[in-house]
Length: 399
Image (cartoon, rainbow, N blue to C red; front, side):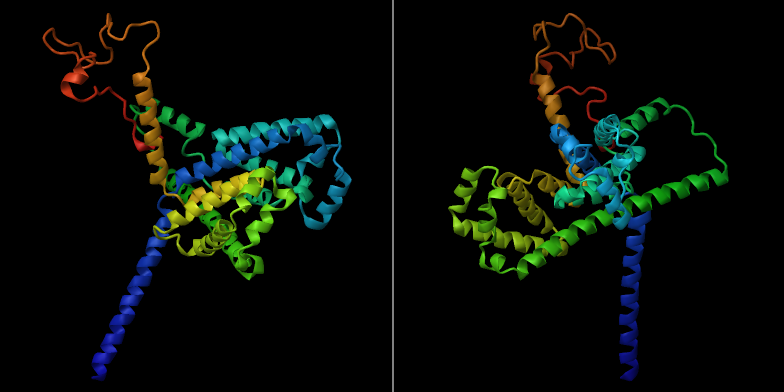
């Protein structure tokens, strides 16, 4: 009897050990084998680059009063604060107004090039320097949205955010097409090992960067929900009512008053918000995360419209995009290409009758006299299917 019990315990211990080793092996393979969520990283790059570009353009008329020579928070005061906090900014390297204008123009160009994905490795570093410099120069005018953009700009330096939907990706595709017929050069063993080590290191750093971004967002939502639970106004369902009646957060007072006229709806929205924020870190590995993300999307849109905080809401909406799988973004790209092709097919050619075809279709072999033309206007109606042209359906990797 005792031997059977001992064997059973040993079997359970062996099963648990194998389960743990399998999970560790899966996580290790996920970390080093391939870069994850490349499309999500591209969305983060495009989103934060565009958000900061719009932010700098929006504040362009007031740039001198916020970050420039006319700012009440002078460069001397900023230097004293930097000595205490360890911050730094390229904007205080010179007091010349022309230098500040040059820095501002370069910041606009850097944000645009980072958004487009041109030389993304270099531009990601420059974008982080730009965001850090402007954030530190007027640190007492920043809010939660500025803090999140600052963190994400630093995290994106670690990621391979230029491999999809970027000018870099387009350049690599064109280079691959040009060099496709040429055989791959023979490399020595040390060169191959160095290339493999570089690829593995890039993959590990990218995956770690995305995991840090996901952990940061989970921490933000979880801590915000837990803090709300401790408040009596959130427990009583009146927190949103009070927030919407603050004059500081009323870009459209009439709209705010219209919403606050329904106290039960406001209380229910507050409870759903707290529940979604607290539950968010615990539903990431199941399908329940999609309705939770939908609730959080709606919450941030409401904050942007009703409370006048578009930068904060935009930063959070872009950060939430990291939790959507790549198949979601590839399906969106396929739908977009299909819509573009359909729109182009329905648009008649300028200055040409739709039924006229004086020149035969190009790009295919010449048809014999008795063979129907697959590109003729009546062929689709006879066969029931549209003609197929070479290269009309790109693969998912060409997105």
